[in-house]
Amino acid sequence: MKSSAVTMASSLAMLLLAVSVAYTAATDVSTETLSFVVIGDWGGIPFYPYTTLAETRIAKAMGDVGANIHSNFSVALGDNFYFTGVKDVNDARFKETFERVFTAPSLMSRWYVLAGNHDHYGNVTAQVEYTHLSNRWYFPQLYYTQTMNVGTDATLQLVMIDTVSLAGLSDMFGRNVPYQPIAAQDEVDKQLAWLEATLAASEATWLLVCGHYPVWSVGEHGPTSFMVENIKPLLEKYRVTAYLNGHDHSMQHIRPSNQSVDYFTIGAGHLTDDSTKHKGDVPAGSLRYHYAPFDIIASDGGFASFSVSAQSMIVTYYDAHGKELYHYENASPRTR
Image 1 (cartoon, rainbow, N blue to C red):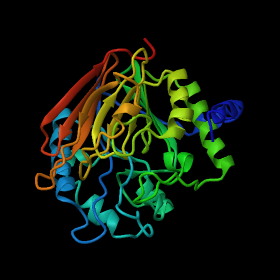
Image 2: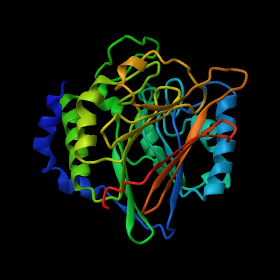
Image 3: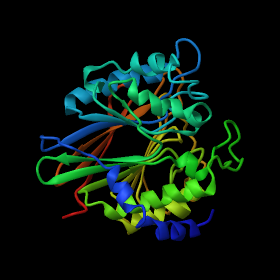
Image 4: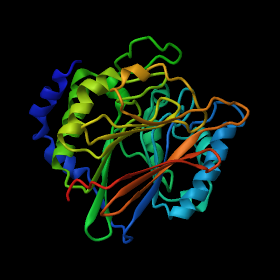
């Protein structure tokens, strides 16, 4: 589907506006600063010990950082279980790759979860259903939104989308194989219309859209054509603060010139890939930061933290050992 999908979605957007509002719940946060940690592409391995050295190190570092920033919740950007997701809601991988790995007290609050391509290779519905069995895993449906109060006069809204249903399923091994559709066209149109209605209705101070596939990326997979053609225009039209994604196993910050949307790739949750083969496929001068050392012995990876107040949003990247790599501040709230 080409960029005309946005126009098609627009005609349905107002019809679904009431539905999108119904899916938005406000969470009261009494602190003046709302903080959280973000990880992507973290899903271990499908055989003993069901995790990787980098993932376990990152889990510890996330716990330490989470405690230092008084993290309120966590965000998981997909590829939660390598290589083919889970079989059912009772799959042992939920325990072995998630519950028994991310054990720090600071990581016991809610995890906002979405699906990656590897999750769609398996039973993605089981990951949604696991929401009812876990005290912290929150994945109520393939796409959803949550709005949180920050102090008394600011809000943060997360919009979690299912990019695999939208753009198609990538080949597990082939990098040049076209993505294969897995959702009927009417389901794609429905999600696009929901997304536009949700963004149009948002009055959030900070508006973050989260998905698995990137819009822009210099890494091995590079930009996702569907996302560039259909999602990027919506992010710009509705003044979205930032788009967060995984898929490429690196840490990137991209911000095209004369645009207000920040693009954060946070996909190094269990290993890194140092490819920059698509460096020429992103807008010139837009790459602000890139981290992806390839060192199996060191087991490097990365994650991020966000700290949001009424005045600013601070993003910090860390390596697998909790060392600060990159610091960025956005001091332009949407509603100011």
